[in-house]
Image 1 (cartoon, rainbow, N blue to C red):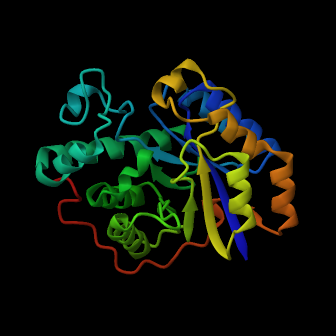
Image 2: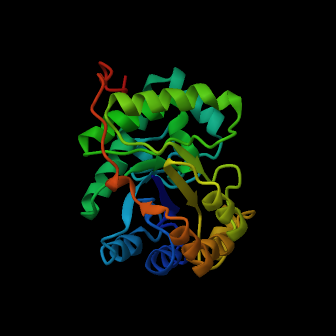
Length: 284
């Protein structure tokens, strides 16, 4: 069976993103959305989601180029005085490896984001991370360990066909962590190579060539390129991505191909295979 999860990332980032999620879910092929709990329009996103019970809403864990959930004074090694994470992912990754104080703050912020999601009252459909930061082994392990405390059952593995070879060890490690914890995962993901430009033509290519198994297609739709979105993602084409997800032609193609649209929450969980939390729960 060919199953397709269609996800909108950055839910809650901007009202135009929220509007795109609602419209593409109600009339198009969108099945899921990943919520940034500390984003400016998160409250609006939650209110919309509660009116769409068929939408699978997950946590979009934001640890880079985004605002934090905890106050800056509680995680001073992670954010600037405004409470914003750096966009320098490599530098942040080194800190996670070599500075115990940073790891403690990182665990606290990850737990705070899970707690904020739980406070919305929405079922936790899945978890992924902004800019795939959970490929970092420290973040990935904390995501799994802490997520299990909050009922986590599924996680995105950013394993796109043809990904750079240097990512293979980290993708493999994250997949093993998820499997040991009994978390459901997709077999493959589309949206990384053409991030910000998942146009109707590219979505059509994914649908046309979809293999058996579970595939996730994710994008960053918005009904318009607002000034706030342009400042954060100047090269992205959110309106074109929205048009693809809301396209009647794409929806008809999915139906004609016999592809089952689904969510992470509808996937069967795996039996745990001996996942053991680290002695210090990743915080030492």
